[in-house]
Image 1 (cartoon, rainbow, N blue to C red):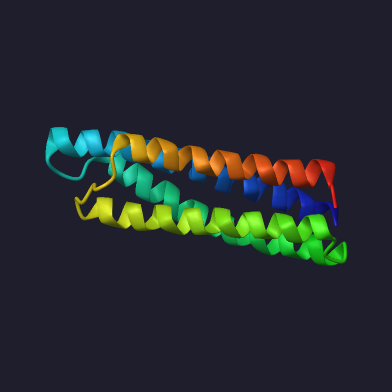
Image 2: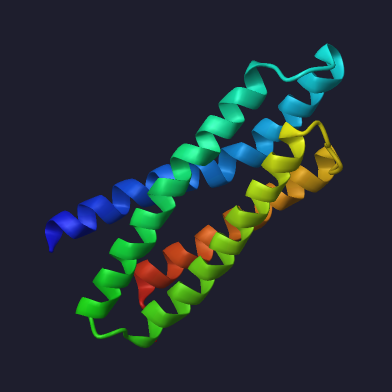
Length: 136
Protein backbone atom coordinates (compact mmCIF):
# COMPACT_ATOMS: atom_id res chain seq x y z
CA UNK A 1 0.00 0.00 0.00
CA UNK A 2 2.85 2.39 0.74
CA UNK A 3 4.17 1.95 -2.81
CA UNK A 4 0.79 2.92 -4.22
CA UNK A 5 0.83 6.07 -2.08
CA UNK A 6 4.36 6.90 -3.21
CA UNK A 7 3.46 6.40 -6.87
CA UNK A 8 0.29 8.46 -6.38
CA UNK A 9 2.15 11.36 -4.78
CA UNK A 10 4.91 11.35 -7.41
CA UNK A 11 2.52 11.29 -10.35
CA UNK A 12 0.28 13.94 -8.81
CA UNK A 13 3.34 16.17 -8.35
CA UNK A 14 4.26 15.75 -12.01
CA UNK A 15 0.73 16.29 -13.24
CA UNK A 16 0.31 19.41 -11.10
CA UNK A 17 3.55 20.83 -12.44
CA UNK A 18 2.08 20.68 -15.93
CA UNK A 19 -1.30 22.02 -14.84
CA UNK A 20 0.44 25.06 -13.35
CA UNK A 21 3.12 25.50 -16.02
CA UNK A 22 1.40 24.93 -19.38
CA UNK A 23 -1.02 27.90 -19.25
CA UNK A 24 1.85 30.15 -18.17
CA UNK A 25 4.12 28.73 -20.89
CA UNK A 26 1.42 29.50 -23.44
CA UNK A 27 1.71 33.19 -22.60
CA UNK A 28 5.37 33.13 -23.55
CA UNK A 29 4.71 30.81 -26.52
CA UNK A 30 2.26 33.37 -27.90
CA UNK A 31 4.86 36.13 -27.53
CA UNK A 32 7.41 33.93 -29.27
CA UNK A 33 4.94 33.21 -32.08
CA UNK A 34 4.26 36.95 -32.50
CA UNK A 35 8.00 37.64 -32.64
CA UNK A 36 9.04 34.76 -34.93
CA UNK A 37 5.88 34.22 -36.91
CA UNK A 38 6.39 30.48 -36.68
CA UNK A 39 6.55 27.52 -34.33
CA UNK A 40 9.54 27.83 -31.99
CA UNK A 41 11.19 26.04 -29.07
CA UNK A 42 8.69 27.24 -26.46
CA UNK A 43 5.86 25.64 -28.40
CA UNK A 44 7.75 22.38 -28.62
CA UNK A 45 8.50 22.45 -24.89
CA UNK A 46 4.88 23.22 -24.00
CA UNK A 47 3.54 20.38 -26.16
CA UNK A 48 6.07 17.90 -24.76
CA UNK A 49 5.26 18.92 -21.18
CA UNK A 50 1.54 18.49 -21.80
CA UNK A 51 1.97 15.08 -23.48
CA UNK A 52 4.27 13.76 -20.76
CA UNK A 53 1.94 14.83 -18.00
CA UNK A 54 -1.05 13.13 -19.65
CA UNK A 55 0.43 9.76 -18.71
CA UNK A 56 1.11 11.00 -15.20
CA UNK A 57 -2.50 12.16 -14.92
CA UNK A 58 -3.81 8.70 -15.80
CA UNK A 59 -1.53 7.02 -13.25
CA UNK A 60 -2.39 9.61 -10.58
CA UNK A 61 -6.12 9.12 -11.08
CA UNK A 62 -5.91 5.32 -11.14
CA UNK A 63 -3.77 5.13 -8.00
CA UNK A 64 -6.03 7.68 -6.30
CA UNK A 65 -9.07 5.56 -7.10
CA UNK A 66 -7.26 2.49 -5.79
CA UNK A 67 -6.41 4.26 -2.53
CA UNK A 68 -9.98 5.54 -2.11
CA UNK A 69 -11.31 2.03 -2.81
CA UNK A 70 -9.08 0.51 -0.11
CA UNK A 71 -10.49 3.07 2.35
CA UNK A 72 -14.05 2.21 1.38
CA UNK A 73 -14.65 5.53 -0.41
CA UNK A 74 -15.26 7.76 2.63
CA UNK A 75 -17.23 10.94 1.95
CA UNK A 76 -14.16 13.21 1.90
CA UNK A 77 -12.61 11.02 -0.82
CA UNK A 78 -15.75 11.26 -2.94
CA UNK A 79 -15.67 15.05 -2.64
CA UNK A 80 -11.97 14.93 -3.52
CA UNK A 81 -12.77 12.84 -6.60
CA UNK A 82 -15.30 15.47 -7.62
CA UNK A 83 -12.69 18.23 -7.37
CA UNK A 84 -10.14 16.05 -9.19
CA UNK A 85 -12.71 15.59 -11.95
CA UNK A 86 -12.92 19.38 -12.27
CA UNK A 87 -9.12 19.55 -12.41
CA UNK A 88 -9.13 16.88 -15.14
CA UNK A 89 -11.68 18.91 -17.13
CA UNK A 90 -9.39 21.95 -16.71
CA UNK A 91 -6.48 19.84 -17.96
CA UNK A 92 -8.42 18.66 -21.01
CA UNK A 93 -9.41 22.26 -21.74
CA UNK A 94 -5.72 23.17 -21.53
CA UNK A 95 -5.06 20.48 -24.12
CA UNK A 96 -7.56 22.15 -26.45
CA UNK A 97 -5.67 25.42 -26.02
CA UNK A 98 -2.39 23.67 -26.81
CA UNK A 99 -3.82 22.07 -29.96
CA UNK A 100 -5.13 25.42 -31.19
CA UNK A 101 -1.85 27.14 -30.37
CA UNK A 102 0.03 24.49 -32.31
CA UNK A 103 -2.01 25.52 -35.33
CA UNK A 104 -1.03 29.14 -34.70
CA UNK A 105 -4.38 30.17 -33.21
CA UNK A 106 -3.80 32.02 -29.96
CA UNK A 107 -7.29 33.27 -29.16
CA UNK A 108 -6.95 33.74 -25.40
CA UNK A 109 -5.40 36.85 -23.87
CA UNK A 110 -2.55 36.83 -21.38
CA UNK A 111 -5.06 37.86 -18.70
CA UNK A 112 -7.36 34.93 -19.56
CA UNK A 113 -4.47 32.46 -19.33
CA UNK A 114 -3.35 33.90 -15.99
CA UNK A 115 -6.84 33.62 -14.50
CA UNK A 116 -7.24 30.16 -16.06
CA UNK A 117 -3.99 29.16 -14.36
CA UNK A 118 -5.12 30.44 -10.95
CA UNK A 119 -8.37 28.48 -11.11
CA UNK A 120 -6.35 25.27 -11.04
CA UNK A 121 -4.37 26.50 -8.03
CA UNK A 122 -7.59 27.11 -6.09
CA UNK A 123 -8.89 23.64 -6.99
CA UNK A 124 -5.63 22.00 -5.87
CA UNK A 125 -5.79 23.88 -2.56
CA UNK A 126 -9.27 22.39 -2.14
CA UNK A 127 -7.94 18.88 -2.76
CA UNK A 128 -5.10 19.37 -0.29
CA UNK A 129 -7.52 20.65 2.34
CA UNK A 130 -9.75 17.59 1.87
CA UNK A 131 -6.81 15.16 2.10
CA UNK A 132 -5.22 16.76 5.14
CA UNK A 133 -8.33 17.56 7.20
CA UNK A 134 -10.67 14.76 6.04
CA UNK A 135 -13.63 16.86 7.19
CA UNK A 136 -16.38 14.37 6.33
